[in-house]
Length: 493
Image (cartoon, rainbow, N blue to C red; front, side):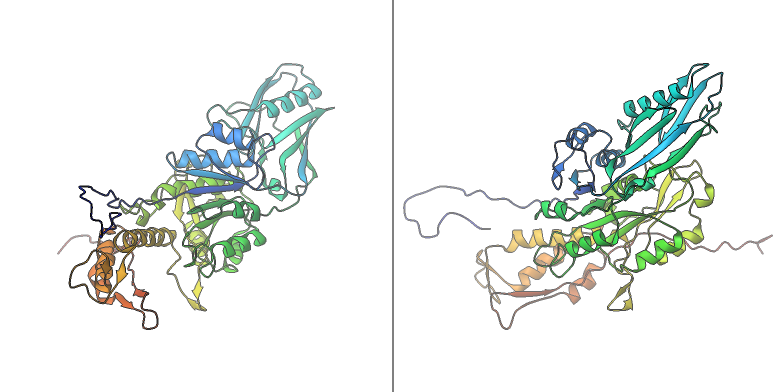
C-alpha cells in the first residue's frame, strides 16, 4: 500500500494514513442517439443523463424521437443508467394527407393507429367529413398516452375534409412511420373512408459526429443509434476501433453500437456482410409485414432488454443465453408471414444479422444478438460474433485493470523482492494478481489453471521500467443449442 507518511520524519508521531482497500464495481452506461425538439432544453449535439420520462420531455420535448426511445428503453431496463444525445435533424420534414370520405350517417367509434399508438374518438350521427377531419387533427395534436406518457411523432392541421400531418423532425426516417386503420371487435368508422397520400417525402440523413464529440472520454458501453446509414456507421467504426478509437490501448473506454435497419431479408444480410466489424449490431425489420412502431423504437427496446444482463459480470449474467427474453413496448408484424421462422433466423445469423422471434401470445422476444464480425485477416472467425463476448471482455479487462491498479500502482519493479518491501513489486507478484483476478471471474472466464500455464509476465529487455503481459482468456459461452436424440421403441427389450 502507498502511504503518505514519510519514511524519514523525526518528531514523535502516532498516526494512521487512510487509503482504499479497493472495491471494483463495473459500469454499463447506455446512451441513446436520436432527434429532439427545440421545446426541450438539451442543445443539438449535446448529451445528458435522463432518468425519467419527465426528464425526457423536459430535455428533448414531448413527441420527440428521443422521448420515445427513452421510454422503450426504460420499460425494458427499469434500473439502467440512461443518457441521451440529441442529433441535429437535417433536410425536409415529411408531410402526408388524410382525406376523409363519406362518413357513415349513424356515426360511431373512429380509431387510427399512428406509430403503434391508437388515436380514438367518438363521431356523432350526422357529423360531416369536415368536422371529422377537424376532430382527428385535434386528437392527433392532443394525444397523450397516460400509460406510456408518449405523444405522437406528427403534428396536424385540418382544412376542407383533409388532415395534413407533418413529422416532428426533418429527415428520411419519417418515411418509415406507420399509419394503419385497425380492425376492431366492433366496427371502426374509419374503415374504408380514409385516403392516405404523401405530399412531401421526408429527406435528409443526419450526422452523429457532434454527439460523439460531446461524449469526450466518458465511458458508454452501450450506444443505441436511431441512424444506421453507411456514413454514420463509418463514424461509429472509427470511434470504436482498436487502433486509435475507444477499444485502443490509448483510450480503453470500450463500447458497442446498436442500430436499426429496415429492408428485405436479402438486403439486410448483404448490408451486414459489407461491414464485418464486431463493434456494430443491427436490429433488423422487413419492408413489408406491417410493423406498427418505428424502427428507432425497436432498437431502443431491443438493446434495453439485454442491457441489465450485459453489465452483469460478477454474477455471470453477461454470459447467459438471451433467447426468449420478452421485449416490452413493441408489437410483432401484423402479417404473420413476416414473423421470423427458423430458416430465416438461421440465414440471417449466418450473415451477421441479429434475430428476434414472436411467442405464441404475440410477444416479440430476443432470439440471438450478434455483431457483424465474419472474418479476421480474411479468415473466417466467430470469436466476437456473440454479443456476450463483447461485454464479457469489457468486464474482464476493466476488472484486470482495476486489480492491477490497486495492487501495483506507484511501485518500483524488480526481478525479486527478498526484503518484502511494500514499495517493490515483481513479475511474479503481477502474475499472481492476474491469476487471482481470473479465478474470481468465474461467471465470465473458465479454465483458470490452464490460463495460468499460458500466462506470461516479463520485464521488457529494452525498457526496464516496462512489464509485458501475455494473458490468454477462455470465456464461458451462452448455451444456445440443445441437440438431443429421442430414440423411440414400441417395447423395450
